[in-house]
Image: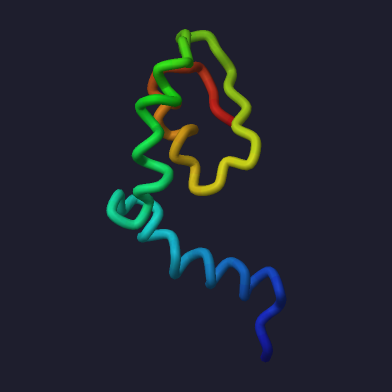
Length: 70
């Protein structure tokens, strides 16, 4: 049986997922992260909404310091 569109998308992203953590492959995103985070003052009771989160680099950086990231 042929894969559905959703299954093809899920498989494609699953194959790519291991590269999301590789800083060598995300230099453009990772190099500006400290600068971006220097403008944020996260508090333990904050809820963060990450719009256009991409691979979630910013969300994951903020998650330990806030109540919830969506």
